[in-house]
Image (cartoon, rainbow, N blue to C red; front, side, top):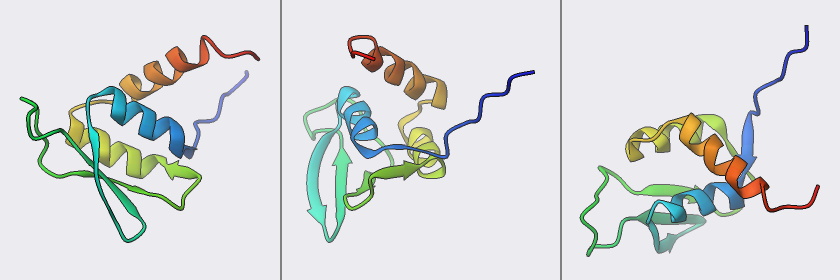
Length: 91
């Protein structure tokens, strides 16, 4: 039986593209961290900003899961976004 392994991390650029697609914006850079939040003019809000370590090429799944909980999203939502990004790409 063929088993597919779950990734332990995803590319940082994919994660940033996802949070931008949700309407979050880059608020500031603090030290080596990018800070994302909804614009102050948005009706949406989150309990804490989403932090992305700018020096990482890959974001660990546990960091993504914590941020998804803050955003009220699931890993399934993120994977659907990833699949939609791959459709227009040459293999």
